[in-house]
Image (tube, rainbow, N blue to C red; front, side, top):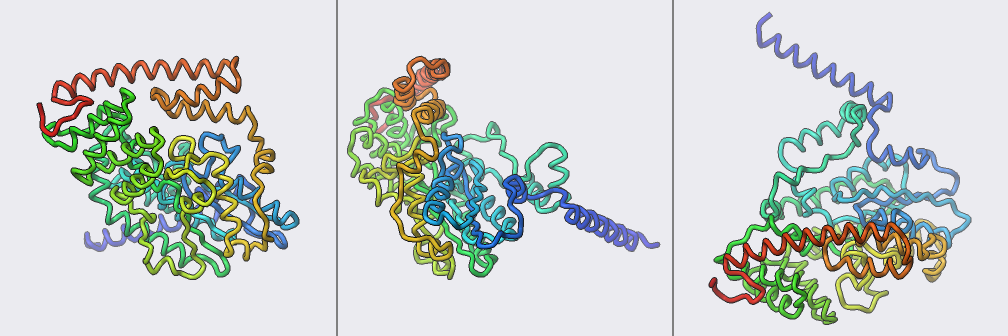
Length: 473
């Protein structure tokens, strides 16, 4: 047999064998998808009960009740308001949220769940497209992972070695923040196109009568201060005037000089849109000074200047927004109706990103009242009931205490942790876990102060200080 013929025959045999194994794995339900695992854990079958309605939520940490241990969340508040409006109608709420994930995960999981006939699909996504976890999921390694996870055989192998059927988290120690920022900037156009393509693909696959609702989070990404907490990884050019003001603004923040910090960050941002982070920091300083109107305007401007556009990754005039059965909403606009403060998060987040319980409820209550949703699910018009939800979810002093500790740990080592530790101390002055958290905070804070002192010395040796100048010394 000629060598070419043998190679072709061997290749076809291998493909046939793999196809057979894949078919057998699917028939045996070996290697379930992430969506199938969640549905099985909730006991949701493909066949509905008479009159049953199903509502599925997909997204990142905003959906899982971050800091609340799941006790309060947008899907949980939605479930309460839905059952209050239609107590006799069986409504199944399934939350597929997973912290840190973006639209790729949300859409893939939504597609894998459509065989369970949801009536309404909520995608609460858009904020994580430019965070490091998703920015760094490129290249050959993650391409291979995507291929493996697309097959039942591959997912089954992953399950046997104790891995979930989701993409792994990149090794952040291999990258600098500058690497991430440059990657985000270079991939901005491709990420926008990919976002649109995935949403359009999901819209085309929606079953007749199923409503798809895309909700833009309250902050559409964490591009801003949170990107540069690890200051020693910053790439700094001491000859660049904008960089000098940016670093001097950070030093002023560390010294609690908020007026000076706002002025430095404003001057950095004036010099280049590359310093969108400086605009975020300036807005934060203005908020500290209770100059909320100015802070709100700057937050919105920074959102437009940063890598992520203001309206998700889809311009307002995009034809996709007019797709029948597809609804686009902004959590920011919905919450603005309930909270008078001008800041972009309206003082209703735990840590500048994740919503507080009352905001979770306020957003859920708005979503329940959407005509496209209430019409499909048959809800009667009714005002929301925050106090009822608070009691039903058990949002008591103990809950407030645990939340305060969680947020303090999230802010560990930074002055922003102090109010949450103080709040927890006021609620339960003799709790040992508060003392332990305070010790952790103080230890990290001491190390951070040492690190900042070292950075201050390094930067000042290169001409930086909290009193920035136009040119290097």
